[in-house]
View 1 (cartoon, helix red, strand yellow):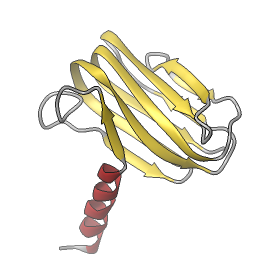
View 2 (cartoon, rainbow, N blue to C red):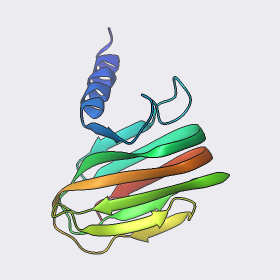
View 3 (tube, rainbow, N blue to C red):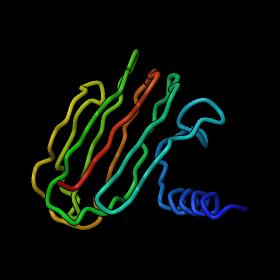
View 4 (tube, rainbow, N blue to C red):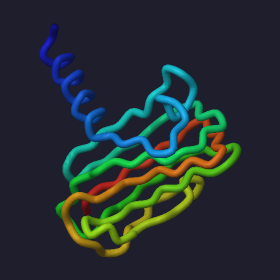
Length: 137
């Protein structure tokens, strides 16, 4: 196996271990076989999933942010239901909430550095693309 492939597989295993699914009725947030593509690195969190079909549930991740704020870039297409992004700082104070249907770049309010919680809340969501990124400024 090539070193780059081993590294990708190891990264996916670490990301999968850090993922918590809450309220989901199945193993997948969308149709069978479709999983979110996630990059979860200190200072950089990226999330993308395609072809969401009527999903309801909440998915949470822990993300390490050494700063007190984050820049959030949203680029999502929602055709039904809703998808909301919520971010909580290390003290579990909500520093951000916005519909992922609002595309653009936004800034969280100030919070405590450390392990932040990134939560994606789906409610009967139909979305060709759900995509966002949070980065330490």
